[in-house]
Image (cartoon, rainbow, N blue to C red; front, top):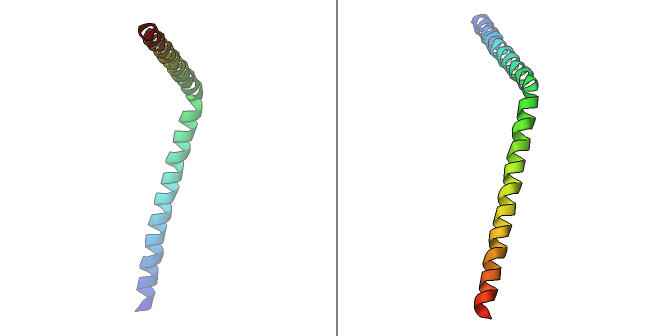
Length: 75
């Protein structure tokens, strides 16, 4: 009686192993595709950083302008 259960268990283990292998292959394919697109990602990151720094600069300028206006009103 125990023998069929062991066979069934080993068969299900094979299915699980195949699923793991497929998952690993899919992950590897995604990594390879990402490596191909690495240049694009770097360009996008550089554009994001440039835009972010520009927004900070604009905010500093506006803050300084408001500060100057506040000082002018106070005098």
